[in-house]
Length: 499
Ligand code: PHE
Image 1 (cartoon, rainbow, N blue to C red):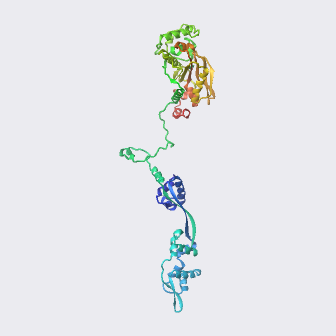
Image 2: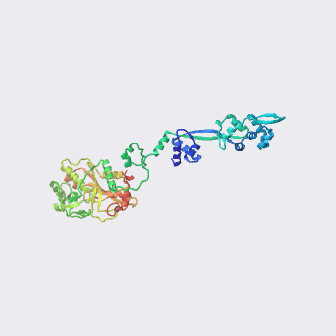
Image 3: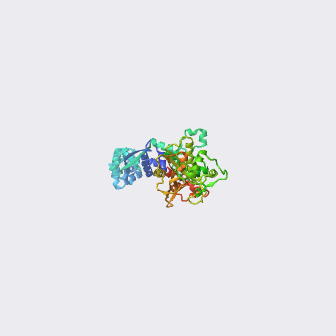
């Protein structure tokens, strides 16, 4: 409703009123009232009575009669005493063509009678009561009158004397409907709940305006999840939906779980490859069950019963006990497999496990590298798994996330064979970026845990997926001391891409 329509609705009552009457009440033109009537009727707020009326207006001659009186009235006004018709007409100032009419109508109205005085005909006043014709002329006045409500004979007379013209006129009258009343009341609803309303208990009877959730508001910056946390949560949901169970593991790790268990030779560039942070406090951590340590030592030195020749050097327990910040989440997978094995239950097979967690690497910082980032670790264990299954699981996972342009590239890992790096296409950087690494765990790493099944596994970089999904071309904008706070603030709490 616009303000005019509202004002007009307020002027309506249960009794129909004409557009003219309403226009006057509401202080608008009758045209405005007419068009508002139509709108209000369509909205169901007003009930219209539309009619075509016949109205009468005076002709110029009729208007002249209104002003000066009819010729017959003018005639009798001068009849203070009986006089000849000619003299009366003369005295009344009637033009020639009206003289006869005036005398005739004065007679018909029984206003005058003819008499004879001294052999001469004179007019004598009998009555001066208002004639129906005069009444009709007054009723129409300078405006108009409803011809159907007027005396029929009077109308006929007016027309025969060419004093009036009849017109057809379209008309509308409107009455308010129950819906219209409701609409008015709603407009009177209260916007805010005040302490006053609470204190007085008036809230119980107050009508509150419903919230317009589409209305624009002041810009608010509430606390919310970081974009990477949102993505981590989504990743969790996807993997759980794919049937994975979540595992956990420590951030401060021993070299044993991080390297030795995974068949990284000690004192070998392979350990530097991971840009590991070594800790000074604590410098060492404890080692697991001695049976497992013995087996791992044997695997490194001679291959043990794995069918491998081993690495052919003297394995050191001290080196294996060194404390580090984990550079990848894969030791958690081995811990999990070992834990289950040691409990005598073995790992649930077939089984699918994952975790999303933080790792640390002493790397130089650039647009795709930070010293801290998050990995999406996962493994599947079952009898007949092969490399195709691995590629399929990874592709399936990324598909759920909305990343479909993937490439696999052969790579070397000490603990997997075959192994593949995973690349995803970054649209705005317009190049393939590495988003993860994967492979099938080697028997050298599984046999010490009494696992004879195949295990496919991967470690995916959460930040790289975020870069592709949210079109981030520099990870430093999102994480760390150079992050763009504005961008993070404006980032939607529920990005469409994650819904
Ligand atoms: N740990 C590897 C990395 O950090 C990823 C990986 C996990 C590779 C499991 C193979 C198997 O890059």
